[in-house]
Image (cartoon, rainbow, N blue to C red; front, side, top):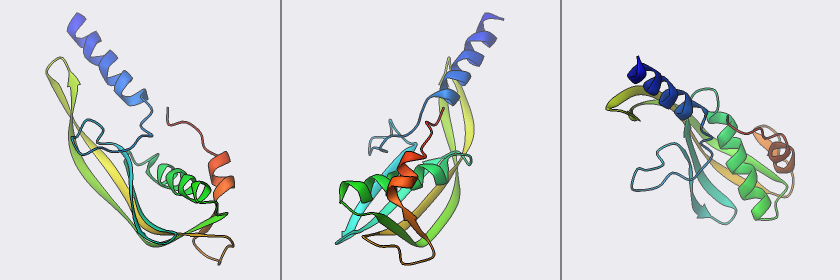
Length: 132
């Protein structure tokens, strides 16, 4: 019984931990965002999380990049979503297969909106709710 309660507690902790962080190369943070600058005011942004938060996290990181670069808007191009199966170590010798979603796109940072697929960076940033 004690082992079952420990496993349940670890699973609940893992599920409730905010995952808005940069993904890193060594695999300790496999959930979160990364971006690559590919031109002036142009980035490739990727966000990996569960289905409920993946697009919200993508928008959050994109809005941060726009604000950091003193731009009012970001517009998306070549937007794609995919699913990845990941075995996560839950502690106490238990692994769990978790389906994660990835959203990635090229974003262009702009001073003015150019129509579809453009977002007001400050509105997106201010509407952010923590992922827990």
